[in-house]
Each structure stands twice: as structure tokens, then as C-alpha cells.
Image (cartoon, rainbow, N blue to C red):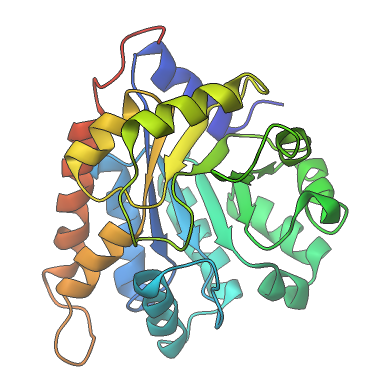
Length: 278
């Protein structure tokens, strides 16, 4: 079965481009603003959209994403509303892949079977659940694949050749390479090291490899895109969003544009960074 994620990466590769994968937290800073940002992302240059499922304890994320989750929860965001957000987006956009990213606890509370049914119906294409290792694939990964959703796994600089086959075993859609050790948004990746790491991963899989953690500027994105199939940006977009809020943390008339302007800049960096067939 070919998914939207498969189709998008294939089309970009045919055109000699890497993917710009954007991350934002669903419901940050409020549902209506989040809906407006989500609707504007494809035209701004986002090829794949990662939507964070707000959670009280996002342990793998840095301060920016943690704060975005808190803003969303404070504004009343729930997993039900996150799926509604996707459903509304999908009614207007049938092509752009959406990946839900987060932690297992909210899904477990929601109910795995119910969640997978509702996510698929809403138009979700894939899942990244950072606290479920391959040893727990029967919990969510295998049911998700059976439901027709891609299950995207993270590989890190400490994922050695012995561990990598287990990480890749049931991965689909793409591999998310975490370019630095530690939490999100706290350091910049080294393009040369990233290129070597991507090449190593590709010796084990034919899946596209998207690189994230620490990519903040168009120059960062361009250098990473030269050696990867995709570039993931999250904290930098959330920082742009936060910078547009008023003193009480509420959206302003600058909020949507603050995000989309930065996405457009990053997209310009990614476009044309790779040669056809690279």
C-alpha cells in the first residue's frame, strides 16, 4: 500500500528535492490560530506536517516544545480536538501528509483501537511515538501498520549497527534521524556528520531518511538537505510563534505570518539543495 508519505517523498526525489518537514504542537497557542497555521503551511512550503499531540510530560523535547504543549493544554487542547484539527485540514487538502508525533500515554488512555480507527478516518498518515521502543511493537506499531498508518521510528547518533535493524524492522514512511544527542532545539547539527550517518542508515534500509533536532535557519536546512531526504524543523518554528504572542501569551495578528514566513525561508533553503538522483 502506498501512503501519502510514500508518494510525497517519491515525487520530491523525482524533482531532485528533499522534503521540508515542519513540526508544530496542535492547539498552540489556541485551537483557532492552530487551525489557521495548519491550513497555511503547505502554501508556505511544508511538504510533510508533523503535528504534536499535547502532553503534560514531553520528556524528549526541549523547553520550546514543552512550553508549546503547556500553552495548548492550557487553551483546552485534547487528543479528540487534535484529530478534529486534522479532519478539518484534510477536507481542504487531500495530498499533504500529516504525522502525529508524541507520547504513548494519551493514545493508551484514548484506547489504541479507537485511536487508530479515528486517526485513519480523520486523515492522519503516520505516527511518531517517541517512548515506544521496538520491543513494544505489539502495543501500537503493528496495529498501526495493520490500520494503514505509517509508523516512523527515530534513529540517533547512539543507534549502532547492531541496534539499527531492530529500529528499522517495522518502520515505514521514513526514518527520522535525530542529529544530536539530547533534547530538541538545544544545539545545531554538523552537516558532515549527518551525511555520514544518513549513508550508514541507508545501508540498512531503502526508506527515506529525514533529519531533525537543531535545524533553525535556511542555511542549516540547505546543508542538511544535501545529504538527507528530508529536513525536520520544530523548535525554530515554535520560537517564531512564541515571539509573535502578546504579553499574556495570546495570539496576535502577526502569529500566523510569523510561522509561515519562517517556513518559506526554510523551504527556500531546502529546495534545490540536492541534485536529481542524488
